Image (tube, rainbow, N blue to C red; front, side):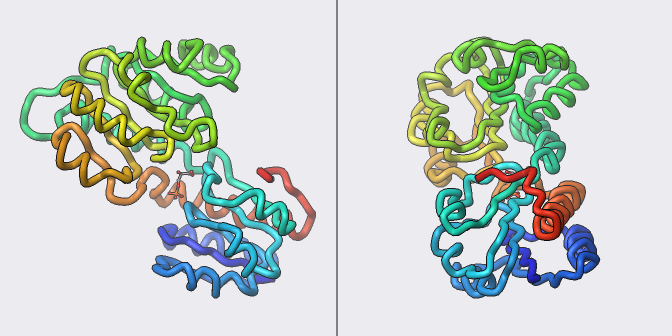
Length: 305
Ligand code: 3PG
């Protein structure tokens, strides 16, 4: 059995070592494709793979067609919008994610980005503090819950909106549930996005929603760029010089944003949320274990297709 790690953005070496240990202990072979620059490299590497561990790497119908022996793809992480689930199902390939394994890393970065934003990007001028501010967590999944936990340490007032999460789960964490995204944006000074990119959420963060935010608001995005209406956020920022946007996913209109709203906009050059050795170890080893358990015992617990 050949297990391939295909990561454009590599795991920390310590995580790759841990994955190798799991795979070899099961009697399987590990192959590694990191930092590839051409899709052809991925197409060549998957030809004899029985299983693939990926991150945000694109697994489309073409990749699946090239991977004739493929049985399972595990996205070492939370979001699996980079995998063509329909094509995988058609090809008889099981797709899994590793929910929760990298959430603390992403949640910590939210606060790294927020402190940077409210201190005016360290430009020497007087900024603001997080203590006492109203934080709106948009989607209360694994990352949202970690954000709430950390926000308590900053002394923030915490609200959340999640159409699929019962109020009682938020209330147990001393988080105030609100009834709609509109209410969240009207209520909070700072919004942290944790919605997945789906047909329903794509471009859902638009001018109408952002327009509800109070003066001096900040939006932090460690989720997906696709959920933002990029043309509208740019237009909104031009019309609202008090508003700041910090993101861990380079927007499609980065050059225009940099030019038109400089000083109120920041993006990490490459998605850094899950880029810690702890998160790489947690998600990578979970992925390896899930593959071994699936191939040896048929356990499909984290299947998403
Ligand atoms: C996730 O969905 O798990 C995060 O967005 C992390 O993505 P990455 O593995 O590409 O850093």
